[in-house]
Image (tube, rainbow, N blue to C red; front, side, top):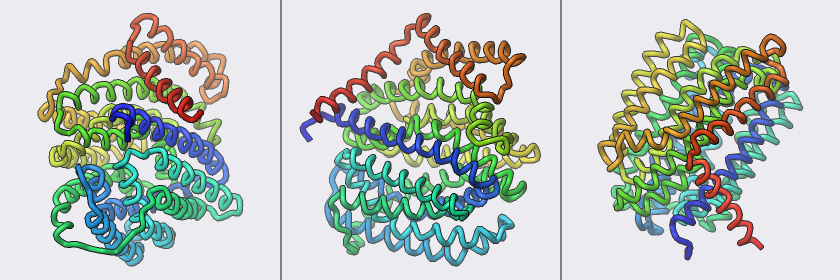
Length: 491
């Protein structure tokens, strides 16, 4: 506790990034193996099962995990009340999923979904323990132990899935991995938090926490529909195979999209909650965070657009070729979403939650209408619909920052200017390399991968020689500073 807030935040971000690198690298390797052992229909069934599970997770959280971190002080009565209320709610959601699975299966026209949903619903019984335990660790900014627990969870998930797939369990391999992973995570979090759950409920305490938790829950519910409306409409109007291709494209893109920004958000929420009464300090730190996010997001997602054909073909195999085009399109929406991810920790910490709810409602309505209009064009049309709606959502979130904080559009442009210019150079170099190589090398070949990867690296080096953006140097200094301090501290 002797470390200042800035140093603790850096270390927290470091551990989050460590977890992201480990879990996403292992996830990528596992997805390659499973893509060759399973079939698009298996991933389609898994993806459509997750639609209802994700809704249940939103309902069962009720915003309480955020309350435990956001409050200045917390006592045992509040912890016990949150745990008890969450446990009862999770039990209720579990029961509803058991009874409602057949009705959802009718909606997507596939009876196999019934048993899949019922088995994976078991995870709700254990998620309450994880939620409260992790929240207590976040209050102390103990992201080291959170990261270890999540990394072990990922390893347990992927190992179980691979073993079951080799034994011929098909889509059940993916479900089994989820269940085992949650059990492992629960045991580790409880051990690290040194917290013993108690079923005690105090209604007066619950009433005090209800308002903020309800609004956070509303954000989660809207996020659920935003993140799954494309899955729902594809499952309804196309088929499981099309959904399988779309699901693979989305997950390959989200290896970078979600985690580039969100790897920092949990730590930042804890940090911003401690300084929420100092707007100038918040904006100063927020600008640096948004800049760092852009410095990573632009080269990664631009590179993925050009590398998608060779990546998909060589990692997943020829049967996944229809994943390439939606993946390339999704990278554009992924970039839009990543650029505003850093704002969400501020929205929660300063309680601008109502403003975000309004923006989400507009986004959800617009997204649904555009997807419905473009779904006749298949999964590529759905991907373009997400791009169009995401561009509007960026403007809505930016408006919240400009209205509620001493933050201007010029401030935002200053965070994006360097990464944007570097990205333009990267696009030009990659496009030229592609056109030169195409007569001699197949776009899906391994040599093309190395040609385009080399072009991106050369482009970034050239851009740095021209523009000399200080952000990259600062980001490298921050990362290496945290790494070497941790290394020296462990000696």
